[in-house]
Length: 290
Figure 1: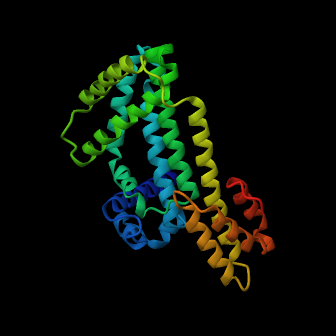
Figure 2: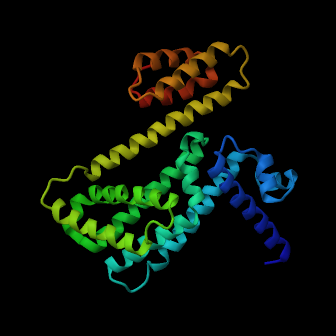
């Protein structure tokens, strides 16, 4: 690798690291590009050589941190270890790696300040699915067929145990020894397994698959509304359309959206030919006959 390329990569990483710290400290919305530039020790022009916007920088931060954590955790994947010992080492590594990137954890805990646009939502969601797959593969290796029907219940319980201890460590790094914590969690899982196998599972594969599809569809509705907003930029006399999209967006964000309201807004928006196809996508999700 030539020297120029090394310097280029170093500068990009410096921006990512500086921005992550600032986002964790001040929040995404309250951090300006000027502050990121000052913290990074670069010019504003240099910033825009690497990133077009703060949103693009945020995506790069998440990608970089997720990739580093994942690559380190799976270092033990092909080692000749018994499943429980391997999972213990991987859990320990996972805690250590997240602590190494704890600014990202703090940043994500400020979720309400992040621009959770489609691409960012998708990335965080996919990472959550990967974590569940990792837990389930490891738990299956340890406990085998006896937990087959309880796998989702057990992996979600493990995640439920994992998260609060992780947040505790993020804010008090010296409070717990990571190696002790990993072993402690595995002992708790041993106890849960003994109890679970004598009970009826709550979550089946069918229920989870259905839920995942619903989440994907819901994300697709948000994405579709965002596409409609983009279309509005080139439409004249759009005041009524803006009102309809705003009402639609507010309604679909509710826990129990009112179908007649959604239907009414879609009928209004459908009159604009460039928005018609988007209206049918949303109508199909809510089983509305336009």
